[in-house]
Amino acid sequence: MEEEDEEVRALLGGRPEGDSAVRGAPRALPALCDPSHLAHRLVVLLLMCFLGFGSYFCYDSPAALQTQVKRDMQVNTTKFMLLYAWYSWPNVVLCFLGGFLIDRIFGIRWGTVFFSCFVCIGQVIFALGGIFNAFWLMEFGRFVFGIGGESLAVAQNTYAVSWFKGKELNLVFGLQLSMARIGSTVTMNLMGWLYTKIETSLGSAGHVTLGVTLMIGAVTCILSLICALVLAYLDRRAEKILHKEQGKTGEVIKLTDIKDFSLPLWLIFVICVCYYVAVFPFIGLGKVFFIEKFRFSPQSASAINSVVYVISAPMSPVFGLMVDKTGKNIIWVLCAVATTLVSHMMLAFTFWNPWIAMCLLGLSYSLLACALWPMVAFVVPEHQLGTAYGFMQSIQNLGLAVISILAGMILDTWGYLLLEVFFIACVSCECAMWQHLISYRALNSEVEEEKALNSEVEEEKGVYKPYQSPDIEQTA
Image 1 (cartoon, one colour):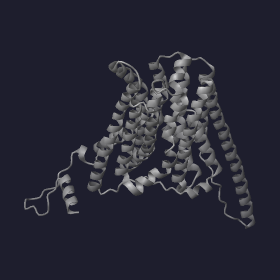
Image 2: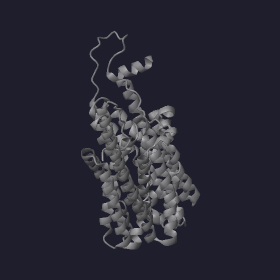
Image 3: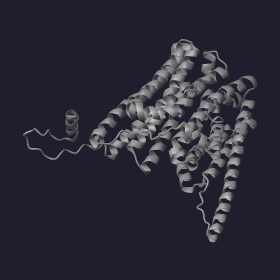
Image 4: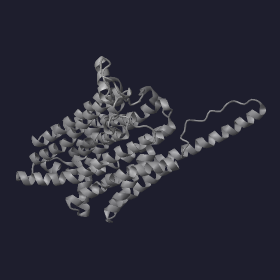
């Protein structure tokens, strides 16, 4: 304890009490070194943003190298999509356990380092699978990578809540999301070019070229691990100087709460799964689609395949502000779903410039993310939020794992047209669920009005009983 006090006094510029010299006022720390100063917190924010950069960069590396992976590893599309499925499988469970491990076992600092190590190790194993021509090793690497990926995002958000408050927090979350999309965009446009350069250096294409390319991508994960270590040091230092507590996720997971979930919440879960399975698997398979149908070059195909992330980076904060100001979450989600349906129909049944459809998909994806996820808080009590969000992420990952495999099988058997029809069916199912949610809300509103009217009549008769409204989303 005395050693810690000495360290704090040294950081603040004071002297030990036993020093016979005349003690002046403690020196003010430089702005960059003062945890309470904005300049220091901006440095922390920069580290937070790059904390998840490596994870998002490497997540979409299979999509960026779809042609090369299938050719060099001699696998069909079904096996290729297993690289995405294996990422999602561990997160079916870890969505419930990630926050618990951070809060109760490791703490935010060691938890962040722990999950960053899983991301690094997983990407290295993934690359070694390419070098040694072992596709099973690549699958195992993606499984290990998935263990760290989603939980690292939870740790990233926990750091944000610990260091920033109020309106600052909305901006911080927006910047973190934008950096994640930048990571995905960079890998889409860089990895193919990098593969070509390594192929030229080695003299031939093949699984070794693929593995070396993926190993270079692992450098971004190492940089993120360094950010995790520096963040841990700065957070510990700030705790001593400012006497602040270590950040916690605040998640309270109780599986017994699932039986109390309302019908609107289950509909939101289904809508979430139906939407994301029509976006992420499509991006995972999109590069070859644009090459085969629209005769794009590999570079142009990578560019258009990444446009969803390019648009999402700047537009997510803008749409978030718009939804906050206007409300009407149901209407905005319906607009996003309808726009997604139009974009998939354009890609499936027309030969119009696909940039139009992909830009629409990017806008709708950004809008839905801003409008759908906050709706969970409108239909469940606060004490069930942790369980609701954990379950929502869990079934989302389950859906992505299953549909990724199914999409690969459809593509191998029937081709891209039937795959697009399948995605259209998923979005159409989502529209039906959304219409059911709107009808359910309207019916409950009528019941509420009728009960309120009956209560007024009973009050006039002197037999008034207090009315409790049903638990249903009211902000639309």
